[in-house]
Image (tube, helix red, strand yellow):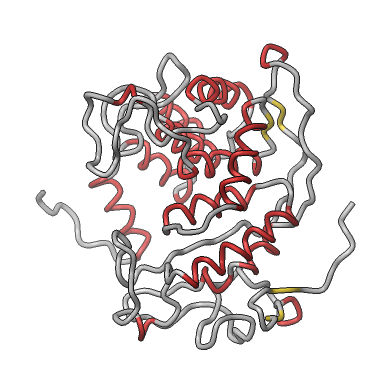
Length: 333
C-alpha cells in the first residue's frame, strides 16, 4: 500500500494507523471507543453482525474457527467485548445464556467446539468430534466473566460447580488451561475458596515449569510442547470486586434457582497476591517490571505493578512453604 502520510510520531498514532490498516471493523470501533472517545453503540452494532438466530455468535468472531455457525468460543469472545464496553447485562446476556444452556454437555459445562462446526475450516489443533467433552478452556472464562458482572442465570449453577471441581483437581496442566482457571477464579464469588485454589495453582505452575521466572535461565528450562520460549504465562487479576448490585437475568421460564450467592467485595487483589510469582512479567531480554522492592516474590523477580498492592505495608509475607499471607481485615459492609 502506498504511503500517503508521513510515519506517525507517537506510539498511539502508530497503533491507530496499524488498526486502520489491518483490523476488522469490530476492532476499529473498539479502538475508537477506548482511545478516541467513540461510543459503545458502534461497537455493539459491529458485534451484532456476528450474532445468529440461535442467540450464539459465529462468522469467525474467534479467528481460529471459520464458518457461520455459532460456537462457544465465538460466544465467549462476544461476552468479552460486551464486558469491555460495559454492556454485559440485560436482555443481550439473557439471550446468550439461553444459547449456552442449549449447547452444554451433560455436566452443564461448555464444549470447546460444538459438532456443528464440522465441514467448516478451523485451526488444525481444534478437533471436531460428535460428542465433545466439557472443557475448562471454554467454560472457565465465561463463568468468571458472568460472575464478575453480577449476572446470575440458571445455567451458571452447574457450570460453576464444574469449574470448581475441575480447577481443584488439576494435576498435569498447561498454560492455556491455567489461564482459563485464573479467569474463573478471578470472578468466582467464593473468595476464600478462590484464594486457596490460586495458591495451589501457583505451586503447580512453578513445579511444572510453565513459567520462566528468570530470563537468564530461559534457554535451560524445559518448556512443554506448544509453549513459546521467552513468553511466560501472564496472569493479571482484577483489583476490586465492587458492583452496585446483581444483574439478574434468570427468568421464570428458566426454572427454580436459589438466587445469587453472597459476595465478598475486594477479593481480586488478595487472589492476585497468591499468584504474584506466576504473574511476574518480562519479555525479549527486558528486565522484570514491577514493584521497586519485590521482597514478597521469587528471588530476582519483581511482581508486575498492581499484583502485589500499592504500598510496602500491603505486601504479602512469604511463608517457607510458598504460601502467601497478609493481615486479616474486617469484612466491608
